[in-house]
Image (cartoon, rainbow over all chains, first blue to last red; front, side, top):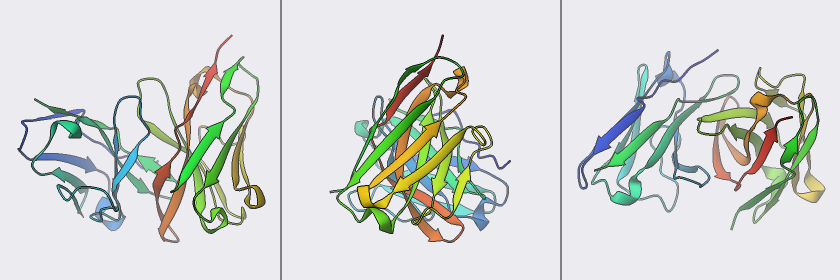
Length: 105
Length: 122
């Protein structure tokens, strides 16, 4: 079965850039999406189709996908961005990444 | 605005059954694919099942195949998940999610419900 691997944690200072990677075999041939989940809340879509932001998602969230790696980038990270982030792709079924906890120090 | 409201969760003994429901509003329910996704306590997200707009195409995760059945009633704007032969490892919060199609083979989840908790324990 298809697997997506993320780093367990990423730390970033306020105002700096956080990059979260998502690795999977030939992931660049698929579309990657990203979800933000804050404690006790439902996930929220922040990026779809590799780099598209849904309405209402701040411009500081951006995405890319090439080769075996998709990347979610948060520019000018704010305290409110502290959350778990999951990548997702589709390989005959839905697949989620292992999740990354972003801590804003 | 889009709303998805799950119900039907609870405590059930191993081997028991439960039926989850999800009521959609704020969009034309029959125009969208739908999915169930779960999250075990302290764990990550796990996709469970998908159903096409008409209900003619259905997919399941291997972990639930043969035990869970997804269905929908477009007249009632509702999605369902019938869960049989429940196991301790099925304990999780179950989310219904509106599912958007990029192509016939790529999907993502653009709106999520608040989730309903299922606990399987004796």
